[in-house]
Image: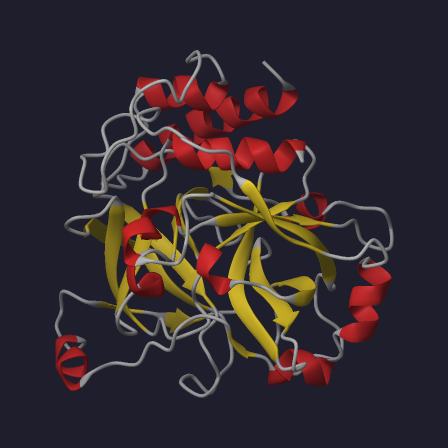
Length: 339
C-alpha cells in the first residue's frame, strides 16, 4: 500500500469507532469499504456498470467505460501570486453563483415549516471548505462551493461538475465576505477533472462531481497542509446522517456567510438515480459542490457526498441531492492524482 492508502485506512477505522461511540446512526463503513479504502480489496471496475436505478450495494460495484477527462487547464503562468493579484476583494464579492438558481416555491415554503425539514444555520466556516471562483469570457465572476480532499500530494479539491469553471480559477478556503485578506489566502486552481460520462443531462447527473488541482501557495505549501482535508469515503447505504456545508448566494442570503445543516441530518434515496436526498433549508444557488460529511469535527470529516446531481443539486433551497460515491469516483480521484 502507498502512503495515502495507509493513512486513509487508519483514519477511517478510527473515525468509525468515534461515530459508533457517539451514537451516530446511518451509514457504517462495512469491512468491504474499509478494504477498498485501504487499497487491499483487489482490482475494481471489473463488473458491469450498474444502471442509474440500481441499488448501491457494496463499494466497488461501479465501473468506468471510458477514461476521465481534463475539463479545464489554466495557463502555466497562473500561480498563487497571479491569483492574489487578479482576485481583488471587489471581484470576489461581486461573484455570482455558477450553478442554477434555487429558490423556494410556494409549496416549498410551506413544506419548509415542517418539522421533518431541518434548518441550516450560519457559522464562521470550516478550513477545509470554501469557494471556487472563476471568470467568464465577459469578465463576469462566478463561484460554487468546494472542499479539500485528503490526497497523496495534498493538492486536490472536489466540486460539482455542473459548475463549469472558466478562466482565472481560484479557490478561497473559509471565504469571508468583504475581507481585505482571506484567512487562508487565495489559491490558484490549475486543472479540473471530470468523469467523461457527465454531459450535463439528467441521465448523466449521477456523475456530477469533479476534482481540481490547486497550485502551492507563495510559501510552497500544498493546500491540504494548510487547511486539512476531508477523507473521501464510500457509504454502503443511501440512508445516513450528515452535516452539509455551502455558501449560498448573497441575493438570497444577505449574510453572505457559510451555512451548515448540522448536526447530522438524515438522507434518503432519490428514486430512479444513484443519488441521495437531504431536506434542509437555505441551500440556494452557490451551494453546489458543498461537502456532505460524517463525523464533522468543525473543520473536516468523512466525505460521503456533495451537493449536486439531478437538477444541479435540487429544485429548491430546501431539497438537495448528492451523487452516490462508489468506486467510480475513486477512479476519477486516482486519475486526478496522477495527471
